Amino acid sequence: MSFAQTVPAALAARDSSLPFKLAIAFVLAALADWLFYGHAIGMSVVIFAIALASAAGIANFADMDKRRLSLACFALTAGLVPAIEEANALSLTFAVLALGYALFRTTNAAPDSPGQFALAFRDLFVIGPLRFLRDAAGMVSLPRIASGLTVWFIPLVLGGFFIVLFATANPIIESWIRELSPHNTASHVSFERILFWIAAISLVWPFVHVWWRAKSEVVASSAEPAVDDQATASEVFELLGAAAILRSLILFNLVFAVQTALDLIYLWGNAELPAGITYASYAHRGAYALILTALLAGGFVLAAMRPGGPAGDAKVIRPLVYLFVGQNILLVASSILRLDLYVQIYLLTYWRIAAFIWMLLVALGLVLIVARIALERPNSWLIRANLIVLTSVIYAGSLTNFAAIIGDYNVAHSREAGGKGVTIDVGYLLLLGPQALPAIDKALRLRAPDSCLADRRDRIADEQAKRMASWRAWDFRSWRLQRYMNVPQDRSTAGS
Image (cartoon, rainbow, N blue to C red; front, side, top):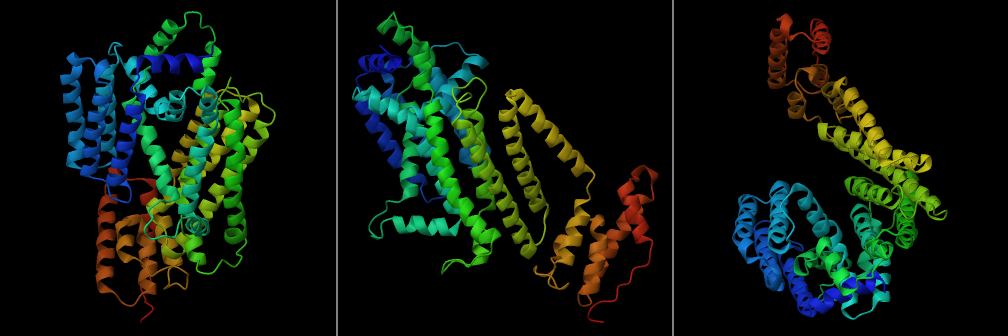
């Protein structure tokens, strides 16, 4: 008897309330839909966290350690206080960690230690959301269906997320999905909403139907002492086995091929767009969504092609991986082109330069992933290579005068200078500081006489001169700027 039949059957025999737990999970998903779908987050996070904790307590009341309940409630309350103050990334992190800790304290008999917490959080937040389809199929004692759902879980769910991200980044794909959605105004069903429900049920299921790896091993051994197929056990829980990886790569390559073809035709080829879609909306939209897509794809490739994994020696999988990574590199290149077209109109800022650098790092990271797979190096080699690249980029950035680059680019490509960009943002130029003084002088020559701008420019120059008067404040970049300032500047303006 395989582990697929042993553990779910043993758990079902011990816990006959799985249909009740399934109903609770759907109620929580409906609550999540009402609180979050299409709405900004705030107090809704606290309400949902309390509802999730209460539902977990009701569903697992018989297995809870009542002696630890008070401490768990205190930890949950403390974790929700930051979310009550403000809902942001940090407060949401505390809320999630508090929920996980409270569940661990009340339902896991393992001793409190950093290692046990790490294992428990892995079971809860990494493995747990992937268990829903398998557990649902196990309730009707259909191990083959459970195995089939496991094989298709990653391809369908992650493929769905890729489609949503592409729809966010590409108005053509978005228009196709809208045509597939029902046009009945009374219907609220959409592709995005279905994905939301799947994600919501998968995320709440580990809290409703608690499963810790140590406990499941005890149940399996008591149900069948002669179980010796640990390899089968790992295969059942292995959602990234060779079969799942192959299906994922075929599906992902087909989905990415659509985006790649559209970018080659419309973004790189400047072909005429369909009616109702402007070239600006196509080119300037979704650069960051495409980068997120590439990051998710890179994570999938690392997980799929891990050293010693089931896909390492598969001859069919490796070419598909190379094709998939190649499409992602082209995707990053398209994102860089989109951002470049956007900057040509709305000019440079520090954040846009940071975005360029980030996209370049993502592209180099994808290339290094291919190198690791081709050279059959361990993940430690990949980490070292990425650290070397990151350190080199940061070092080069420390030698780069970004303020001068931004100032010169914005003035040279502004509308006043005959470029395609918007008018010069004088306020932003002044915020760049003394290193933007050459650009400010160019702006003064291009604009109509502006005594206020000239006065603010002179104040910045005076502050820089006072700073350089002390040898303690000397640096090579400021010295080069001071040499420029010592040369009389022509301030004749376009309006003179």
